[in-house]
Image (cartoon, rainbow, N blue to C red; front, side, top):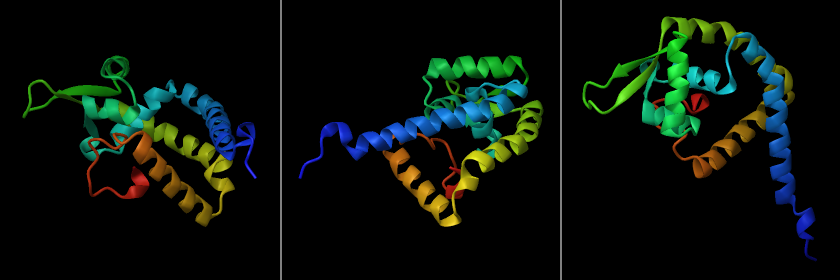
Length: 164
């Protein structure tokens, strides 16, 4: 017995993923907005905060966020104007530069994280049993490594997989 393509469970999987993503973004946005951050601003600060030395090469930051190099430049320009990040020249390669978290950026991230984590707990991870969450994270990493293999560019190899 064949499945009608319109009823294919692969479509259901993609639809559910899109619905969950949109719902989570909508639920998380008020906390980020109150902190004066867009979703990409927050992601950029978070990725810098979780990186060795709280900095990443601009090219690695672009790869991790999925932005183009010009897109990440615009985000870093804005965050730099707000005093949340700074650019640091690469001593080994004059063509490269790093985006680095400033004290103000770390403070903003530290202030918003408890509220953001509470949102995550309330409408995402708190809904799953420990075993479900572990399996879900493993499945997401498997898929991520295929569809966005550069998502951990510049991250230290010794980092715990929980922090990827």
